[in-house]
Amino acid sequence: MTIEEAVFQKYRPIPERLRDFGFRAENGTLIYQAPLLDGVFLATITVGKEKRVDGHVVDPQTGDEYAPLRLEQSSGAFAASVKEAYLSLLYSIRDACFRNVPFVSDQANRIAEKIQETYGDTLTCPFKKDEGLVFRNPANQKWYAVFLRIDKDRMNPEKNNAAERSGEKTDTADILNLKVNEEDIPVLLKTNGFYPCYHMNRKHWISIVLDDTLADGVILDLAALSRTLTSQHGKVRPFNQPVSWIIPSNPTMYSLDEHWKNRIHVSWHCFSSVRDGDLIYIYVGMPVGAITYRCRVEKAHSVMNDGNEKMEMTILDRFSSDLFPRPLLRTFGITSVRGIRSMPENLEACIRETAGISDRKDNL
Image 1 (cartoon, rainbow, N blue to C red):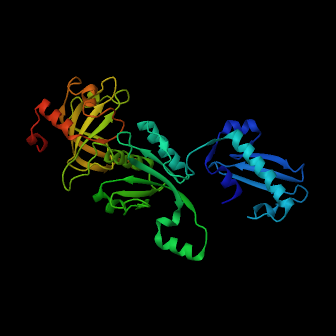
Image 2: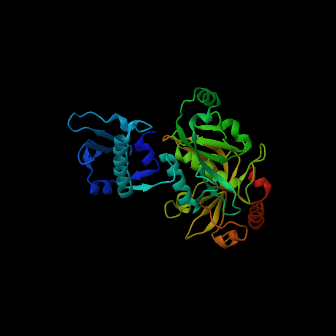
């Protein structure tokens, strides 16, 4: 790890503050120069398009870079004073122009930010040292998303053993542990980006390296499933049996009553946990605030032209908004529907009884 990486690894630049500090733009890169030790050396700091910070310290008379700066152990008092002056400059830039983020990788920060935005949950550190951060299910305080920073080769035992024998340093990576359905793990492990779970029960959990190998949407769907499986109403999919889910719809962005008025067969964004035959109850957000549709998934994971996946569904029932409103859902423990979640069995039984739904209708 370079000096710059160590100082800025959990920080991201604020461009307007860099410009106010004195950075100038040149071919898409922001550059700042400052003298060190009363002009004995010249430091050049650059912030590239990918937000990476680099730096050079040179002798302005010769243009030669000061090599002792990069030694792990300073070779004398003078070299130590140069490094101290350079670090002081880096810290002053960081404090004035950068914001602190929880993780090193951009994807880890994006995923954590989206989870917080979707559910309102807060990252916490349950470890004695800064070894990782977790999201807890507010229903029971169980972990459902565990972020760790580890040596990347630990995800590959053969490479890790070779690295340990040679004593060489390996790259580190942010990983995310999520709870998934047990029967899905063999399928997931065949896809790049998924690994046997690190440091947790591999029978129920899986690890994802957050290096953009997997799309954010795929990871967020699995985070929603993990939150469901760790909730009071979470359930593991029975073998070869359909599962009932609740998913949200925003009426201010897409009016189901308008677009689905004369339709029976419809499509929707597909969540990774959904399978053919599953039942989907659609909760329409405020100002409606009620479950108004019940659908059966005919074909899950159909790939669209843009590469995203959809599920093709048949509308089985349409409910008036006063039949299964938000206050009723609260009595069954449903306080919010911000992502996919499993349908509580007692709520589903209430809906079927109230609406007079028979088992035969599900199989038509």
